[in-house]
Amino acid sequence: MAGQLPPPLLLSRQCCRVFSVINSQIHTSSGLAAKDHYKVLVLGGGSGGITMAARMKRKVGAQSVAIVEPSEVHYYQPIWTLVGAGAKSVASSVRSTVSVIPSGVTWVKSKVAEFDPKNNTVHTDSGKKISYDYLIVALGLELHYEKIKGLPEGFEHPKIGSNYSVKTVEKTWNALKNFKEGNALFTFPNTPVKCGGAPQKIMYLSDAFLRKTGKRSKANIIYNTPLPKLFGVKKYADALWEIVKKRDLNINLRHNLIEVRADKQEAVFENLDKPGETEVYKYEMIHVTPPMGPPAVLKGSSLDDAAGWLDVNKNTLQHKTYANVFGIGDCTNLPTAKTAAALRSLQYSTELSAEF
Image 1 (tube, rainbow, N blue to C red):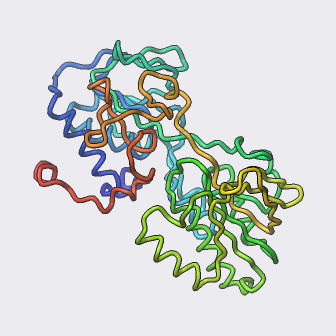
Image 2 (image 1 turned 180 degrees about the vertical axis):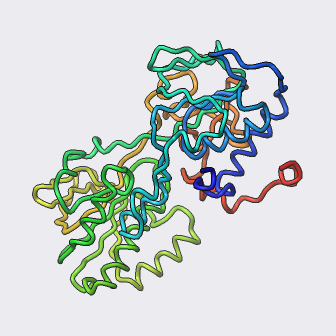
């Protein structure tokens, strides 16, 4: 099942950084790990956690590696953009967790409840204490629909969806395929966001679908974002502005979604340039990208920064205080976009290329 994971290139730079540092410090042993102690403990069974577990297995042996992950299901979330556009099924994104965990690696089916890095220990919600030599935190981030008034209960109504949750992604497709006439509204949150391009991707795919089905002339496509620009990287933003003009898409900058009145098919936005000023948009369909934040278990722990993200060195992904703790992926405070695609343009260093 490993072939179902994202291409190795997407996570290779981060994985190589973590692996390189641990590899320089770790010593293999032929003895079996104690029941509740592992040489390498990985927190999180997403793409980053699974990838690191596989690398560590090759270095220290499967019996010395464990993954803490509560879910029995592993989702390949990038596919959900295509699910929301009707091009893929939800089923195509689903694998059982046991099928993607590297063979022989221990799966601890629990949630992380508490960190105790001074004692090299993690506590789980089942009351278990697990100690480690090295800890890799790959807990991702959390969605906060509840920070928008009217959600998540608003998803019980038609014409509203979100590609960011398995519970709501098919609702996006239902809203799109049943579109008749009016505003097709797409939003971006006023927080860090995983895959910052996805809120726009569904807009472009919706535009293409409405053209294909002869409904485009009846649709007013609107993208509201709290950002002061269309995209964070200028060369891409410039190219996207050309696409926006060509496809007659309406972009409103500095507009932040604060409420959804799903029973009335209305969305309320605040104007960030004019505090206190709001604007109500009627919609025939709306795609909501929720506010996001660090995992609750990280916030207020001894591992987080002031904003609640895992506090790591941007060059090594090593924790700034605890040398045997590392992070990978969305839970970290790296100064990059929270998407594996942010790594695609990075080239391997000569050292890493030679070693791996």
